[in-house]
Amino acid sequence: MLRAIFILFSAVLLFSCENNNEIDPPAILSARTVLVYMVAENNLYKNALQDIEEMQAAEHINGNLLVYLDAPPISPDSIPCLFKIENGNIITIKKYNQQNSASSETLQSVINDAIVTFPAVEYGLVLWSHGTGWLPEGVYDDLKKTNASKLRSFGMDNKNEMNLIELEQSLPVHFEFIIFDACLMGGIEVAYQLRGKTNYLLASPTETLVAGFPYTQVVPLLFAQSIDYSKIAKTFIEYYESQTKDYLKSASLTVINTRELAALANSLRQLIDNKLITISDKTYNLLPYEISEPVLYYDFFSFLRQLTDDETVLNQLTQIYSEIVVSYEHTNFFLSNLALTNTTGLNFFVFPFYEENLLSEYKQLDWYSDTGLVVKK
Picture (cartoon, one colour):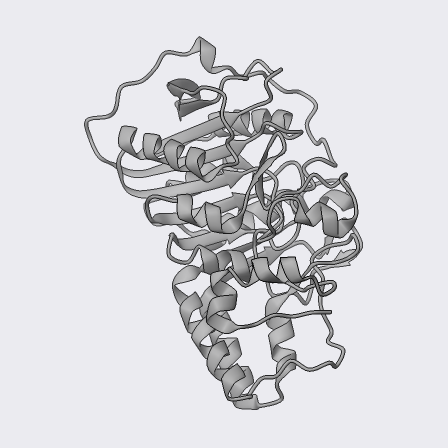
């Protein structure tokens, strides 16, 4: 996540669970409980504090806004804590022992604590940390030949990470929405793996700047009686477009209707089996979502449309796209020189070279199992 590159905020107020009273469970079932799961035992800690501050400033929260924060051991917030934000105040729900928050066991435990304490008609989840799409632990940095990026599959707790399959298996309930405030999670592999866990997935196919979501503006939208997902995406992009420096006008957000993803996989499998689309050795016009080399993530639907000249198939792919992508909002460029104009909002992984171990990992994903689609440069 590019959160580690730009520090947009200089004033940071320290937060601590230690100074708050614990809360009793409500007697009335709420309409919605939203959990923001912040894996911040890393270089994003100050940004986590800023985002919590933004949440405290949010109004019209018709439900339960819960936050789990795991911060560095040397910080004032060294004790992992689950708390509620209510009327701008922080109210402790539970304190934890030191634990690896980038583990499926911890994530599942915290979600269970949240929904048992604040049961609701429906639930939303915000996953906040570093991210690298579907990639397993440590692979992104290895492929980029650097340890400077500090990007992770999802989450980074000290040096621990959580892979996509572990993440999917750790989610104990079905969510109305899952939001990734993390880099590169807006991909077909991620969305398809999580299709049974949420109705809508909101994520960026590009990296994400340190500011992440503008929570003061977005939180009320998450608690609307009828959530306008397109408005959330527009609000996200408007925040970045309002920045004064051009390189900060860098953002993308896709709203994915996961219930339509099975139709895509079934169609692709049939098209591949019937040789109506074929992947050859020809050079494709791959639209990148990254700047640093080697580029690993490219635009998915623009690639699919290059696999056939059949007008009927192209129309079929266009129809499927319109049903899956509810909204895709983006700035014109990312970091001033990566054009996003012709992208369609879903990334996919392209193998930079053949590597048996990585290919074996990829084949464990539901996306590969159901489509058999692997793309190599």
